[in-house]
Figure 1: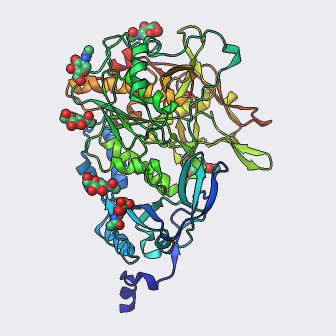
Figure 2 (figure 1 turned 180 degrees about the horizontal axis):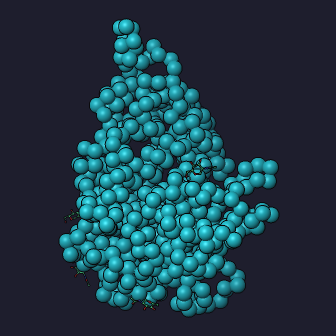
Figure 3 (figure 1 turned 45 degrees about the vertical axis):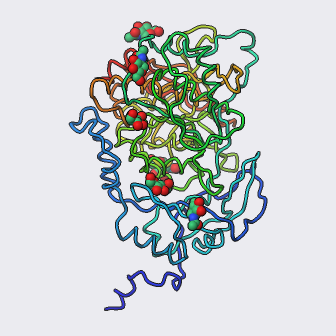
Length: 558
Ligand SMILES: *[C@@H]1O[C@H](CO)[C@@H](O)[C@H](O)[C@H]1NC(C)=O
Ligand SMILES: *[C@@H]1O[C@H](CO)[C@@H](O)[C@H](O)[C@H]1NC(C)=O
Ligand SMILES: *[C@@H]1O[C@H](CO)[C@@H](O)[C@H](O)[C@H]1NC(C)=O
Ligand SMILES: *[C@@H]1O[C@H](CO)[C@@H](O)[C@H](O)[C@H]1NC(C)=O
Ligand SMILES: *[C@@H]1O[C@H](CO)[C@@H](O)[C@H](O)[C@H]1NC(C)=O
Ligand SMILES: *[C@@H]1O[C@H](CO)[C@@H](O)[C@H](O)[C@H]1NC(C)=O
């Protein structure tokens, strides 16, 4: 009898040899653009992130849907970081077991976050390889970037397997950047309109009075590509293009370290455009949160959000990985982090990606589309891209063929979008790609769109035309949501928070429907490069369409 009890007491970790994988479906192949430069020294310090199993995640999701549903009496009753911590904090047992396991390997230099669900610990690579059987750490380099990752899957002691979601810092290399392109299409050569703040404000019905004025409103862009913006570029951009509306020409807060190198096009684009639609609103720039070679920059940003009680209300992020390259446990946990932000009244906007429906080669000439995460997460608002029908005029918009969109293979279709997506699947039935290419039961994206083609950006003091990508449309939409938050804050109303349940209830009202054009996909015989096509009301290319700000503000600022 007693032996059974004795077995369940977590003693003597080192004497128990069995261990289990946390991320059995994580892709550990190193992309070809990285080169391996050798094993790391056993004394090399690593900094790994332990994601401790949280409590009450089902309840967290319930609360998120209630506080985000405009028809619920709970609408807008957001939680503070402290309340989120009280809800999701790992159990005492989980905290004790994980700490005990780390301590039994001599790992004591750890820091935690306010919600206690992440531990970040430094240790040598020799200790890490003993702690995580299977792991083998190498250094990899790409164009001046250097990271440390494991070439093989890791496991953890069976006693803690149930208490951890994943360990960060072993896999998942930073994605290739920048995702913006400056490709000039020869057919459009010569003079062209080019998107500037005044063109955007004209197209989306923003008047010169539509600028922020609420005291504590703020917005943010987050960057994970080792990219910097230059304050001088922003000032020059606003000098050239900001003439017709009140705006700020400086970022209020930089979180992380800005390097001293050249400005990145993507970083310049993000700040210049969120501050053009979200004009006169305090703007923060999150940069390079993964300073250590073993850290995952995106994960570092997520960890940071759980440790800051005072955050901007809107964040726009241009970052994504192939859904099939990430472990399910990692994505589920990142979803929980998105929910934690949403219940606090924070809106997270992700670019839908620049590869249309994407393409995954399954072998034997078999292909299917390739969704991207976090774009495919049910708990964020995903932004697609459009172009002007006539590139020389402020006309209506059509699909930008690069606009990312499709159906998740991992996450089920959330209730808020079922009616809209089913309707699309019915009306577009004759025009849909073969069923083998996508998963009709998955979360479908994007949710909304904006122009993503032909932007003017100032970078390294030079005005650059033809900048394109959904990383342009995302801050444009983000700035507009910040303006609506501004109206709400002035009236003493809570911020918009997680927008999707409310956005889908508008059923396209206050948005310019985009109904023309298809995005790209696999270049094979079956689909010949064509993915999904835009259609009346919601579609998996441009979502519900692009914002008519004047009208959207009317609906959302009440
Ligand atoms: C603890 O870890 C931090 C972060 O990696 C490092 O800067 C610091 O030197 C470490 N402290 C000790 C005592 O090892
Ligand atoms: C979280 O913030 C606290 C105090 O502000 C700090 O001591 C701790 O190191 C932070 N945690 C991480 C993981 O950065
Ligand atoms: C700009 O914002 C500040 C508050 O941050 C406000 O006092 C000022 O009136 C705003 N300007 C306009 C034109 O609304
Ligand atoms: C809100 O205002 C306070 C006081 O001015 C400031 O310290 C804080 O950073 C602001 N918060 C945000 C999210 O802008
Ligand atoms: C389709 O998506 C669902 C989730 O909505 C998932 O459970 C299922 O495994 C997916 N099917 C394929 C073939 O990926
Ligand atoms: C917004 O702009 C469109 C066309 O640009 C126009 O037809 C519409 O009336 C405007 N809506 C509002 C509410 O101003």
